[in-house]
Amino acid sequence: MGEFLVDITGFGHAAAGLWVGLALLGVLGFVLGFALNYGSICTVIATRELVAEKRPARFIAIIECAVWATLAYAILETSPMIQRGWSPPGYVIPAAILFGVGLYVNGACVFGSLGHFGNGDAEFAFTFFGIFAVLYIESLFGLLPHQPPPVSASLPFEPIVLIIALLAILALRLGVSFKSESNFPRLTLAMAAIGLAFTVLTVLAPGFSITASIGSIVSIPVVGPVIVGCMFGGSLVSARLRNRQFVLKWPALGTIVWKTFGGVLMGMGALLIPGGNDTLLLVGFPMGAWQAALAYILFVLTLAALIAKFGSMAKSWS
Image: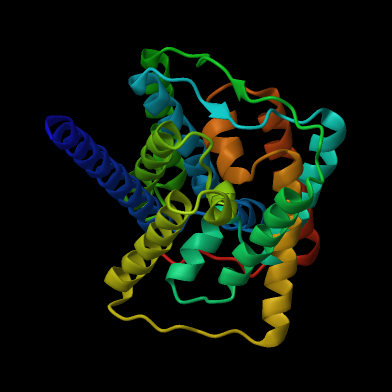
């Protein structure tokens, strides 16, 4: 009888710990989704503002977000890691270009798609459907049999260096946005929240990324849906608080096809690199991976070239 009570007590503690862990993951997912919508942050928007309007503030903020993440890794005394190692340049280069084309077709990056969804732009749900389809098909048929082993790397900078770099970036962004931007505090809070929440999520759920979490709905039946659901919920709440209303805008069939196609291209690029812009910025940059820098530069250059040639309707909403 005594042994039975001990077993029940141990089970109770384990169950409580599981619920606490899931709640924490949910809160972090909510904060991440809220901040993405609150800051109106997106690589496509930032690149369009830089190319078409010569406004670099939002692009600087994206780099700032990577520094926040690096500082969080340093404070937590942990190393960033990706579950599958970086692909060789023969894969990374075409994959990054493909990802850049996907961003242009979609009209938003992974960050922006999640933020747009909170605004009621239902078509961006099909972006994630396209990404999910690619990740699910690959996992089902094992289309990439020769996958590099996991990679982990110690941080290349000490915390004091990161703090100095962060202050310098903040000063630079304030300087370039002094006359043309009015959202400096909003972007600062959003970038800090994204960098910190994302990092803690990767520590608690190794291998986490916004892109990968879409695929984890199937591969991780409980944790995946909790994080994904809370991210979308956070984006919805942010938009609701800002607009005081929520209107779901159902897209036309052509838009659904276009967004799904953009998601498929993004998913294929992210699968081969591996990682979307979230992984490159918030895992690859902190670990000092040259593959991440190469992929990010290439897909931004691809995106910039397409915007310069064909234009873009992407714009911030806050």
